[in-house]
Image (cartoon, rainbow, N blue to C red; front, side, top):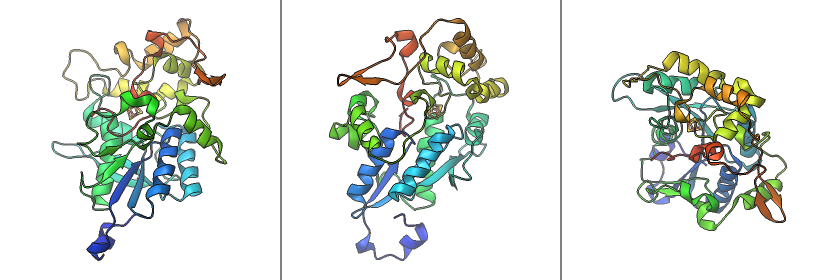
Length: 310
Ligand code: SF4
């Protein structure tokens, strides 16, 4: 389905199909979007499906990407950021596989070494580890020029607030959002597959410790799987002052909390642990009452989609 730059050079230009990039984030919504887009456009478009691995995804997220790829024949390009130190050196993409993909945060650590710790005032990780990696792969491996192709992104109709205000300018497509697909539609579709994303809950999705997740999700992770925070603890210790001209050492989480602070909060504060929403009488209900402090998250706390911080 993908055609390399070399192949393109010898092709009859009159037969060149329009190009479509599909950004598969590894979540269920993104998987359903990828399946629907692939089925609809595979005969009429040249399609490139990419999965950008940060090295901090749950192993079962990686397995789900691999299972989807094998089951539906998407020929997913697994890509990781190559970060080069120095001014005016942009992100490039390394092609890996399910077997060789980083599992110990290597791409993320490389980005932190150059750009510093991400936090709400320095939200660079989505761009460096997801968006720019996909663009670099399409440019350098396939010869696709930026803004000559549309990029399909898995955001649902119940998440319209996550649709980029620059969607036309950036040539972003939101097929599920535009078609009115909700979380329940996605769940129903996935339930018809012979495999699933095997996570204990959504709080384990994306980078497991993602600083955009709600406090409830982070504190639940800290209680259930504190090892998830080993990476941010190590990064905060080593890189709190990297690329940082502020007066405070930079930490990752909201309200200037460190990873150790999250673990301490989970130990000392009463809260109902996060649990995925359930269907009851056809209505989506939350297992825990909504609390602004505990439950406010942002975009990538649900799924890390390209262009989230544009
Ligand atoms: S999931 Fe969160 S921590 Fe990981 S790249 Fe996306 S925004 Fe950054």
